[in-house]
Length: 86
Length: 86
Image (cartoon, rainbow over all chains, first blue to last red; front, top):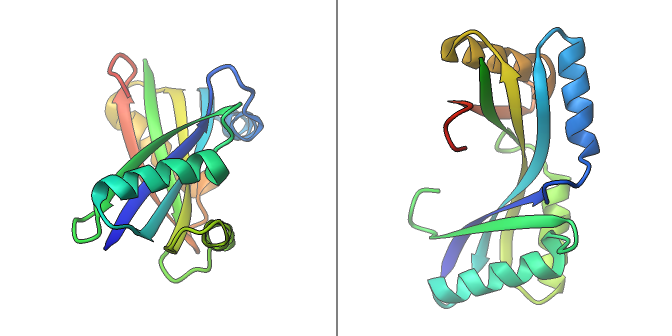
């Protein structure tokens, strides 16, 4: 069965986010008053699994093996049946 | 007043997403069956504005001026009062 998953990967609080800092500085230079910017990444994927439970297990494994760095990142996983709107 | 905003920026459908393709290939190499991966970026920011309406207007402007490329990206904006949980 096909499933859809959204994986959000962001830096743990306290870790310096150079991309967010650069965006903050650029926005302030453009005249906005922006106090902080943090950037996270969302992977939207379609995958094959036997059941919703297996799909959740697989996506969690993908995060630990490839998509997130457990030292500095936190991640959140949402998995849907492919028929449901995401 | 302080407001929080989440801005999601992703490629329009049909635009080639090299980062997503690389993630898809790496996941398939690791033994998963993944049909597609698309990557989007979320900017979580705190900004100053006089009202919720002004905050929404400002963040939309930030997207058009800096955060998104109108030729190839689509963006979605959520704005919250800073007291609400995000």
